[in-house]
Amino acid sequence: MEYVNILLGLLFACFLVRVVFISLRRSKRVAPGPFPLPIIGNLHLLGDKPHISLTQLAKRYGPIMNLKLGQINTIVISSSVMAKQVMQKQDLAFSNRFVPDTLHACNHSNYSVTWIPVNNSQWKTIRKIMNTHIFSGNKLDANKHIRTKKIQELIDYCHKNGENGGAVNIGGATFRTSLNLLSNSIFSKDLTDPFSNSSKDFKELVWNIMVEAGKPNWVDYFPFLQKIDPQGRRRRMTDYFTKVLHLISGFIDERIKEREMGNHANVDVLDALLNISPEEIDRNHIEHLCLDSFVAGTDTSSNTLEWAMAELLKNPHTLEKVQEELAQVIGRGKLINEADVSKLPYLKCIVKETFRIHPQVPFLIPRKAEEDVEFCGYIIPKDSQVLVNVWAIGRDSSLWEDPLDFKTERFWESEIDVRGQDFELIPFGAGRRICPGLPLAIRMILVTLGSLVNTFNWKLDGGIAPKDLDMEEKFGITLAKTQPLLAIPIPLQLLGY
Image (tube, rainbow, N blue to C red; front, side, top):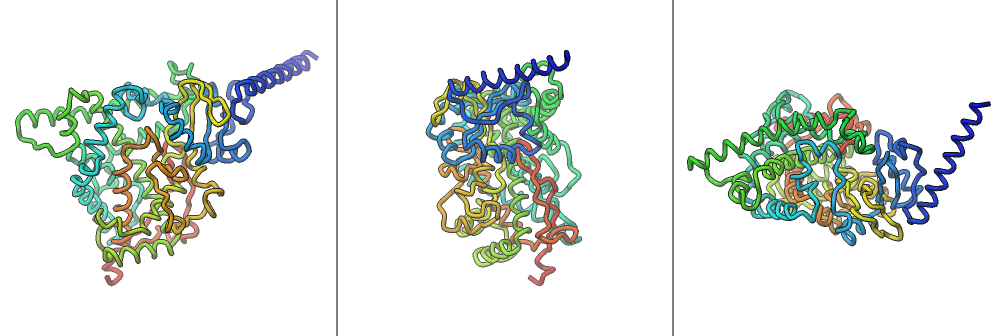
């Protein structure tokens, strides 16, 4: 009988909690969402692919949805209209970041342009420096020869494999290319062997950082666990950050000595940063800016290239069509010049469609409401985490016909672009927090993809039929293929070209 009384008491307590919760929601006009369980809230609803789980929940609760993830109130935006409201019309109210615990390692969140609050004068200074000294059109044009060289090395690596009938791990090969492109732009040196699959060191460190940042962390849902770090996430990230920052610091020391001896010309990003240091940017910010560049600019680009190649191999008619365009405009077998991209509309359609169906960061970088915010008839409570589900927007049937199909023609006569003005397609975000590396990423992805498909014919490894290619996604801070894409490049001379 005692057990029955306890059970009844618990049921009554849960009923009271629910009544109080519902009344609070009504009084504060909080957005609709699933009822949270005690302690864990709605964590049990996320699963191992939260971008899919939250897309399904949005179909029930609407394009603005309130969840409780542990102790953290979370708002999920799942429509282009709501995304425009968050990132353009009310951008200032949502411009600051909800910082994952691992990104506090080595005080990174205090120096990184990704995480510094926008009302911090240092954020404005670093964004200006990036736009002027790293990602401006003039700077990118001046570094074009580096991108050409790194893409040629990628093609040479593929050619070497293809001559022996060997498969290329597309994600791994393009990751090395992206890493060396950035390291040559910043430090004028390679950080990984472009011709080896076994090269580790810096490449492995950057990869580990991305993996660690993408794993679920209990501390992010229950901040009181911060000092305990029960899963060891921050400890591991501190180790990775420390090693990368130590390497970067060594490059900076080496460069300072060369400049003092007068035997080094101003040729790269590091020189440009040292030229304005310490007046505009100090040593810590330079180191963390370099760290940001490697972490944000490698995995995202290589994942996009891997997904694009996977979709082309799964859809041979699309691959044939872009190869026809390239043959007519460029000539079969040649690398793509950046100046040629404007004459390759079908190639650009392929990249846009890849961004639509495979956004690099499915929730973008989380935002935060610093105060209670009136939003579309609801109140978003202070300190709420705000997630924009661009994965869901890319699959919204009210925006896209046959949204689950890879159909490049949907962009053929469309003015929709990825530069933050068309909220149906915002893989780089929008507003004040739009990704500063967008201009470089677009150039790199278009030219690399075009060169890969123009210099080889490709077939899937292991005799896999296109229709059987595994397209499962692995959730993390970026959205990767669960099974790496292995494809065999067939050199054109073997085909009689």
